[in-house]
Length: 286
Length: 304
Image 1 (cartoon, each protein chain N blue to C red):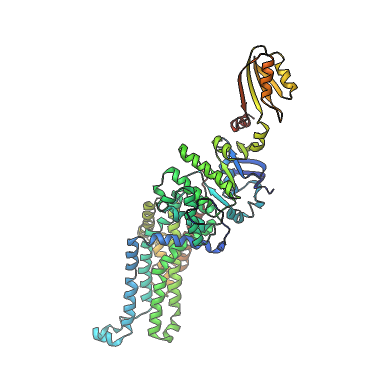
Image 2: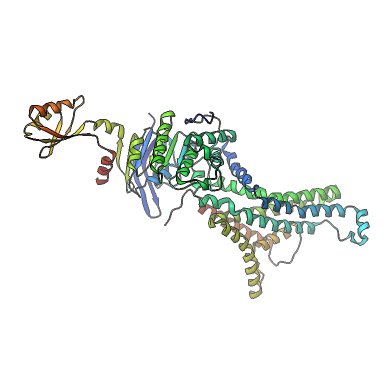
């Protein structure tokens, strides 16, 4: 019906499959997010380290170029698990900053403006809502974390040959799984805080504060109590410990991988519980 | 005719309070009014029908689909306009309505087309590219109506649609509701505390009080039944006047000196009253021909 015919008419066309509808939210979110020049600049900045890493791998595999620079640099320029741990740490930190910037705008506007009933009165569940919002974060973070990580691994594998690839395939798994888990944890924290605080600026501050406060209090507990268990409240530290384990690298944090994974699982479960409490069509005021 | 809404012992408890208690009714009108004072449970009933509130007892069916087991099917068929401000402030109206259409299952091209159509239909055509946060209260109400009808639902639930509207905007909203009913096979549930809105638009009315149904009325039938309700005020010697009216088939009662109330039988001509008065040389000072208004029905229900 043309828009000039201003009479109401029902809809009798085809409907999209129910399983695909959670992808609608990311599409609209990206359309809005990518209007931000700051976000585009930040994403461009996130490419710098992987680009540097790619250059590093190229240089490491070109002996003539190395010799031209400094013949003694050959041993220093080695692409190994340490290279990928540093990559994960740097890009993981960038992912965290991106989360603090993007995360608060995901759920809080819907709750502030009481839009939840409009989503949930449709054939669209709370789980699909959370999944849709999480997809925004997970896919955005993937672009700066495990996707460039795997590209770097691919470049290294191409240059080092099949033998190296075969024996170092676990690094690829570590890059993917380690960073994927980190993106999930970050996304859940961002969504939960966004749902809980509702005010975007405060939610962004709280996301940043959560990590800095965790690190600060963890260090304080460690020094006062002369223990290393204080680090258990430092989520970044816990993820680092998990990465170290995945990359068979010992950073000497004094926390076991099991403890680190348990803390991350508890944090994720808490975020899910908070989302289950907050993402509702209405609130019962007691 | 298949009932639109069937409530079978529906009960809802929120916190420690029973909000809805043992509601049983079958509603099949095209436009159904939900009336009741504040806190009667109207909005909770709507939210229960949409599956937002867990039921503590009984169940309900919408177009024969159980709200406990077939929620997704029901939500495909239902459009909902909430009472409170519900929107996404930084979205334009067309994006907002399109997104809501897509979430209801419309393909994205169809959703875009229908978003434009319904926004023109509700009267927001010129403002459809403006962010919803910049809309006036009346415009927000219209945007909420647009998102409720974008997917062409079989049942639209309107919770206080005229809240905060100025008189012209209210008239326009009521007109829109009437048009939607007239030009499509859509059923409408209108929840309001404004009796006039319900009276102008609804065929059936359900009156709630303290979580219970206190009255169910088919307004169409009530209108027919009470259409020959006459109040008379006379001056002069009215002896035998009441009996004469009764002999003509009217149910007559005297409410004071020279004051009568009567219900006229079908086919009764009002000129008979004038004839009888003339025969008795009786002055007719007032003849009030009226029917029970919804207000009367509502007040009676509240007294009960």
